[in-house]
Image (cartoon, rainbow, N blue to C red; front, side):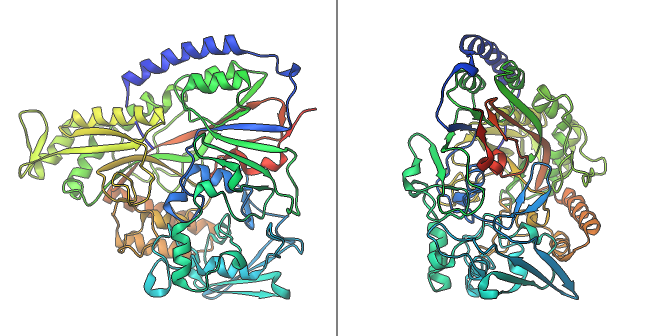
Amino acid sequence: MRRKSWWWAIAGLSLAVVAVLVVTALRLDFSGRTRENSVVWGADATLPANFFPLIAAGNSVATAQLEVQVLPGPFRLRPDLKVAYDADLLSAEPTSAVAGDQQVVTYRLDPAARWNDGHPMSALDFEFSWRIQRSSDPARGGCPDLLSTTGYDQIRSVKGKDGGRTVEVTFSPPYADWKSLFNQQLFPAHVMDRGSAAANCAMIRQGWPVAEGIPVSAGPWRIDNASVDVGQGTVVLTPDSAYWGRRPKLDRLTWQTFSSDASAVVGALASGEIDVADPEPQLDLIGQLRKLEPEVHTEVGPALRFDHLDFNMRNVHLRQIAVRRAIATALDRPNLVRATVGQFDPAAQVLNNRMYVNNQPEYEATNDGDYEHGDADAARRLLEGAGYTLGSDGIYVQRGRRLSLQLMTTAKDRLRINTMQVIASQLTAAGIEIDTLPNLRIFDDKSTPTSLESGEFDMALYAWIAAPFVTPNRSIYETPNGRSTGQQNYTGGGNPRVDRLFRDLAAETDPAKVVTIANRIDRLMWDDLYTIPLFQRQAIISYNSDIVNIRNNPTYVGPGWNANEWELKR
């Protein structure tokens, strides 16, 4: 997800003027209108091709937002970044006991917990969910289509007691972030188990095509095949009558992929076309949303989300460390921040860490003062030291190959497109030609040549959206090992020392030592530079003030984390 400068700055100002006119024209007396017991959520996310969360086609913002209260999980992420056990699913808080090189985690299911077909939930579901996620190596009964096996690959057994209502999960070695497992990744064995590893891998590969909805649920909401309108980009969540816990107070929640245009968002909220919006921050958007008070309330805060620049190590230029260092040297990240996120957040800072973002207490700048300011002349010297010569067109050449690279980013995020253009301008000044590509297909599966998954790209600008867990970052940064990796390391880069530290991190149960190891990992990644952090994102949520109990969540689950508690004032 990424972008460039002055043109978008001008466009942002003109949109601000339009937004003012729209707000003035469409401001309504919300208190005087009647409405159904429903809410329309205008989401700044694209409807995915697939709802299955374990594969690339289902790995999206929309999937996480929609499934947080459809699929079950023992733990839930709260807005304060605390991890709380789900008291509807479990009858007690899970326990963890470590002895030597083993860890036993015990879950106790609520006796009423069941899937929406009425089948009781049991240890068999935990065992099946572990079995299909423990390996991506077909030789070991795994599935190469998995995005990640982190944590599940350290589980040695899953056993049930008390008729399957008590679940004992044994890790060896212990797993630091065990609370991150089985959340929106707990599946019904009686429905999904095909009986063999190969058949289950085929099931994983097919996933849940979005037009067919989500075939199972064990939460307050459900999404069946009648709920999805692919053409309109809408998903209608309806209360799940089989749910035993706290049921929704609304009769319907419509999730609608919505325009990222500032004037469209402001106008739709003002007119009542949508009731909730979580737009990406844009130039002057926050100010225009504030003008809708008190009818529309807006909250802004830091998100566990950061933009970064990735290099494809298969590229003939980018595989050279001198080129990557030249790019990092030419980048003026403080100026980049001022020209992008700093336009609406004066407190925005450069991000110098990939494991933690600026507002987390664990954060430290691990770059040790390197790459703090852009230096085009120093970048040129690095390139010339690596055998590049400056061409007559101002672009460097090595062995007849021009240093020309394509930088792609998400297509609809205007802030990111602005960022991409700023980056291109800075690198061009250092003799590196950048061709920019806003790419609608960036998150498609490997069959799409321009996708991250395909590996056929030069540079990419997008965001990682996180949780308060660092161990799962292993699937992003560990050295790839062929196709049977279970990874999201699209760069192809890696470092054996980083790999060893990730193994240490995964087995460390002392929270203080986890932070130390994580920051040590990040410090090493500055030596390799196959990815460069840029800045932390902010999260916005605006909603009709008639809605109560709504609160944004800066993690990947987003505003819908407690949608069963949303209620309209009477």
